[in-house]
Structures are given as C-alpha cells and as structure tokens.
Image 1 (cartoon, rainbow, N blue to C red):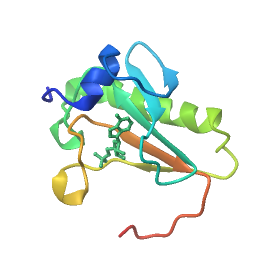
Image 2: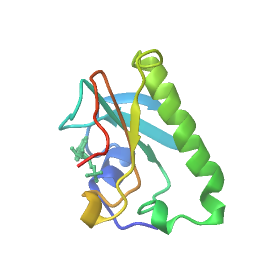
Image 3: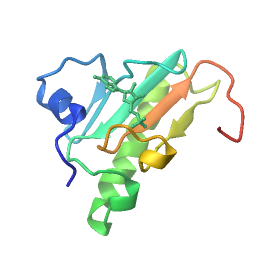
Image 4: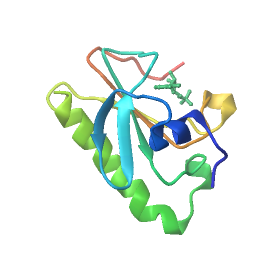
Length: 115
Ligand code: AMP
C-alpha cells in the first residue's frame, strides 16, 4: 500500500482531473504539466507505490495497467505514430508522486537513451 498522495485525492474525486479513460480498476487522466503533445497518466485505483513494491498478487492489475495504456494511446490517435510508456520507480530516477503511474507520451519525436 502507498501513502496518501495527490492521486488518491484524484481517485476519490476530491481534486479534479482531465479524465481520458476509466475502468473499475484503472484511471487515466492528462498530466497537469505535459512533457509532450499527448501526456496521460494511467494509475491503478488500488494504490501501489511503484513497480519495485509490486507483488505476485498485483500481476493481473499490472497487466491491466499496460492494456489501459494501450487503450489510451488508441483513443489519443497514437497507434500509427507510436508512443512511449514511462514508469519512474523511486525519487532518484524522477518519481515525484508515490502512487504507481504509467506515463503515456506521444505526438512528437523522442530520443534514446533518456537523460
Ligand atoms: P513522476 O515524476 O513520474 O512521479 O510523475 C508525476 C506526474 O504527475 C508529473 O508529470 C506531474 O506533472 C503529474 N501531476 C502532479 N500532480 C498532478 C495533478 N493534480 N493532475 C495531473 N497530473 C499531475
């Protein structure tokens, strides 16, 4: 379980979000500070801090997160052009909100490796 975060408040509807997609277990909404023309965050409603703290019991939910990211990419018209999925796991690599989230990024070219 993760601590209370801003994403917990978004899930409970206490803070608004620009929702893109939702299921019983997953919510996707636009990043408030977009790093690309399309920048959507896909989060599980049941909180996990990051992949490093996921367990076998979370396997199905992690799979559903990936499929939700795919659906977001389709809804945002990124099927042809491609998209990047990013999960930051820990503060050192850039995680700022400690509730697992998949960044779905697209609509521009990206370089590799990331900085
Ligand atoms: P990370 O750095 O991987 O933890 O990503 C956290 C992301 O959450 C950042 O890209 C923030 O811009 C985004 N973010 C923070 N607060 C909000 C919010 N209230 N609504 C939407 N996105 C947010």
